[in-house]
Image (cartoon, rainbow, N blue to C red; front, side, top):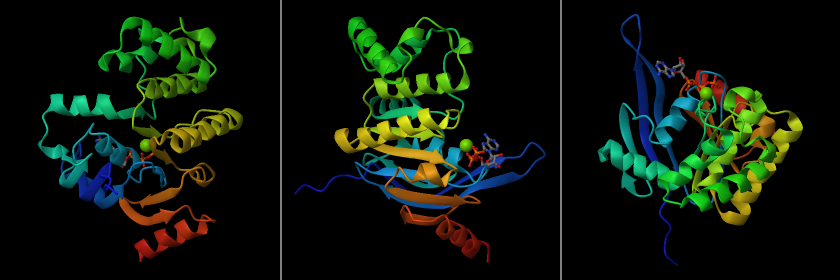
Length: 248
Ligand SMILES: Nc1ncnc2c1ncn2[C@@H]1O[C@H](COP(=O)(O)OP(=O)(O)OP(=O)(O)O)[C@@H](O)[C@H]1O
Ligand SMILES: [Mg+2]
């Protein structure tokens, strides 16, 4: 059997930001992991541990300070900005923590956007965007603007947009953070289905252990370091213990 190329190979990724008062703050330390096609991974850790920073690097939206990163077998550190944009549009559906919807565009336009970059003709864009909006229960809101929606609704638009381009990889930062538990569970079950039935690889950031239960693998980040990487444990104690080991 042909060996599948991993989707993501991160090796000793470090990230530092310059501080306003001078000096630098290191946020990620030697982050190393491989993610294969079809995985459903939760990245979990407390607020400020570096999860979003890590996701921005995984999604080629930000670059690492050091370390190597291969996405679909390609060293992305050598790619130009245009090449990176092509890779992002072709493979990745993003769900951002702050939604990142275009405020002056309608809901339908927002969901159609990735399809434009993917070269769909207008009729197909509209049809598919409507299908996605139906999926997240917002079919009656297509002419609304993001400011007219609640946080949970905006999150559902962001999910519809991420799915519209049929990405191979979904990167979701706290995708259910502003949803009530019923809608949250529905979205997570939908992720499970996308992963199981369509083989879409999902990386989902969360700080809640209950949400991580929907994934098959859990990477725990604490203080910018991976302290656990393996099957989702039965109890959160395993993760807290891994933090303690790191603190020593
Ligand atoms: N662009 C930036 N410039 C400077 N510092 C940053 C930047 N982005 C993140 N940081 C810092 O990096 C650290 C980790 O932030 P990050 O957003 O990755 O955390 P997080 O784990 O996603 O937290 P949360 O659960 O609250 O979203 C924080 O101390 C933050 O202040
Ligand atoms: Mg974050």
